[in-house]
Length: 80
Image (tube, rainbow, N blue to C red; front, side, top):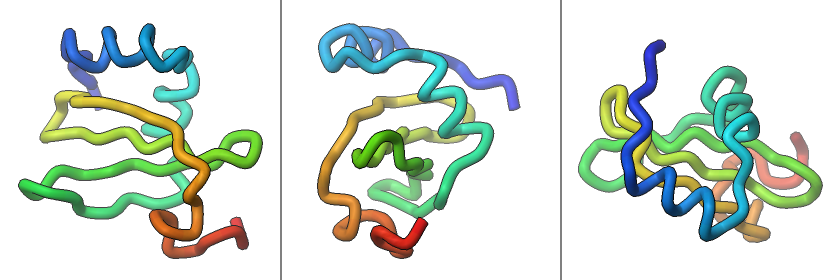
């Protein structure tokens, strides 16, 4: 899919020190996709004991962030 990178996600990547290739890996091969607020899709993938969550609305990438609360967000929990 031709993703559209919003100014917001680009600024959040810099602020949160998230590499673009990790976002691309998450979008290309997520561990899980869940539906979030406003029917947005949340692509999730584990990296080094943290979960990267990438929120998209249609083809727009809205934001991305890492969390250590894997079992809270990933329905498969630590098993993946």
